[in-house]
Length: 286
Image 1 (cartoon, one colour):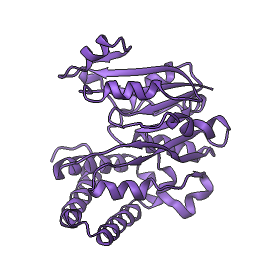
Image 2: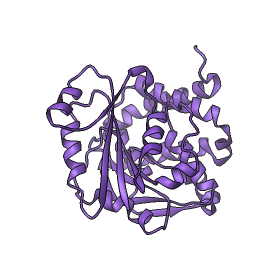
Image 3: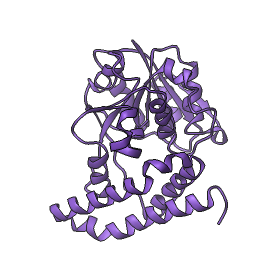
Image 4: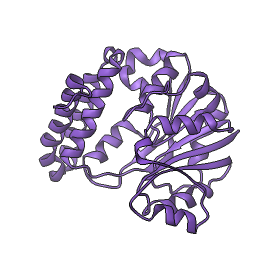
């Protein structure tokens, strides 16, 4: 099966060359195209792309949408599988893509996502451990009772989808989603009786050091997403967040990670308040 990689870019000068090399060194797969979508940037991303003869499409800043640019590229693709990747992942294995798509090719699922590991010794290290364990699994509608909201867990930081299914289910329904577009589509996959695979052997390194303000803003957007898609609430949105917080605290205490323990109440507070504000006010200005 042929594969198109779809990768949005914005101020990506420090990522693009290594990322492009990592895509092109992949083995045991039929890579059809690498589709870069560059939002007009202030850095040298476009210059680097041109100097290295890397094809890309450019869009205006006001035309960017996490969901719509991916949807458009996927609908225009002629490949059997589309693979969404974000610019800031680091791929070290030349079998990353094979491990990601193997169960889609074998018809065991219609979508799959990679394991993400943080290189930083911060709270994200533990959230990655919790959300991306070292054991693969395939989930379906029958797992809703045990997994709840986590049944719809999927990440387009490194995720692949059978393109025919993406088109059949109408992608993101033409919605301009600022966040959680991956969960939005994962819900459609599961509720239409298809399966999603988590591939622990397909590894990317994805590391951030968010400020409290950045965390608040992200969770405010997440709260807005859940307000607008409140059908998800019955699957335990609060329970999922509580489980993650307990895991982080337990692991930080076990490792004696003082930096994380000091940050923990403020970090969790930023997430909690952001989510509450987003759910209450949605897109309104406060």
